[in-house]
Image 1 (cartoon, rainbow, N blue to C red):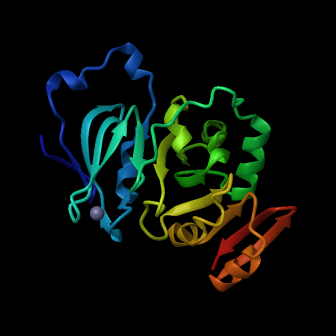
Image 2 (image 1 turned 60 degrees about the horizontal axis):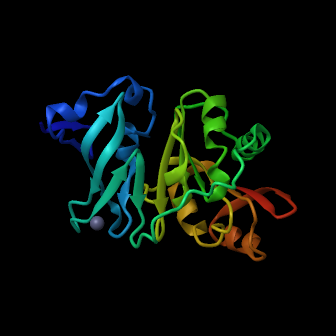
Length: 237
Ligand SMILES: [Zn+2]
């Protein structure tokens, strides 16, 4: 044990039996291990990366374990590939059985707004709009989609999709993300964080932009590229 992966990833495999998956487990696709290199502690902020304490890794993806902060010593659990990075997790998430699966049209629309046509790299979709994440990951080679919503705990695994929840911060280092889409009422809450994590020149999509969004974006050094009804697309820098 003690294999070091990347600058911030310490891999601790507990028990030989835990890493001997059956055929069903091999088909699962959960949080990608490379993702851990861009994660920060949501409490301590951008100066503090998280360390992966992996109980089970399959095909370079983390199925179970925790993300630990060496600074405040908090641990954020990873369960069935879903990373709980909320500082104050709400009550257990109940699957929304009534919700219909995301359509390919939604995926095409969102991918076009985000303006990322090829990987490698990460895009973050926050809120219920993350539902078409699997379609987007399938359309764009080598792209990793981070689906950030508490409901994502109940969504099925899909290749190229990393599921997590966040509250006070988007838990990524500055300027590491190639597009951020804020959807489903998260637009105002995470706007400043989205701008912080975006790489220069990359796009922020506000699905239902608040009324004062244009002023807020301009004040933060963002260029508005397009506005269509409530949707705003802006670029950083
Ligand atoms: Zn911390």
